[in-house]
Length: 165
Image 1 (cartoon, one colour):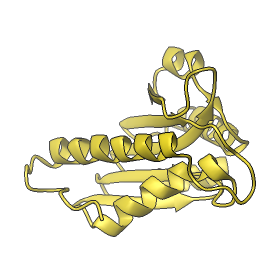
Image 2: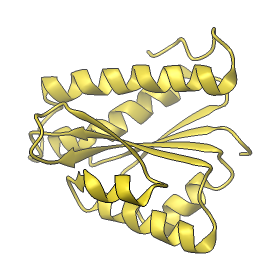
Image 3: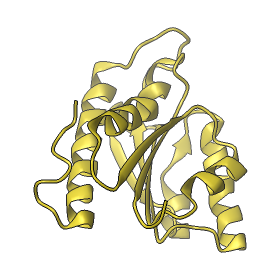
């Protein structure tokens, strides 16, 4: 997979706003941006995450988070910086715990990408059968735009990453 960009979307497709990471990653995958892979994952097993991001230089993880901030708030966290990681983010569900364990395990095994960024989107509704709330969907679209800009910057091609289907 060498050196490209990976966008991992974590979530549960059956739990309302918890599906936001899956929503973003599926759109990245469908857009066919050069040197970018979009991967929706409903499981955040630490070993699976380590294997999944192996060989990628830049990894972006998108997931729903819980907190006192308003729904739809985007929290960007550099997961390679301990202080940032501990400061702000509370996972909305247990797959966020898998991500935290994967980062610590990756650190111990020297198996982390050069860049590992979390885009956490504060959710409101996590009930079974629900859809994305309007605030969370709007935030997901903004994260998609940020990822598109990051792709352009990383590839050095202004025309790259234009399709967002």
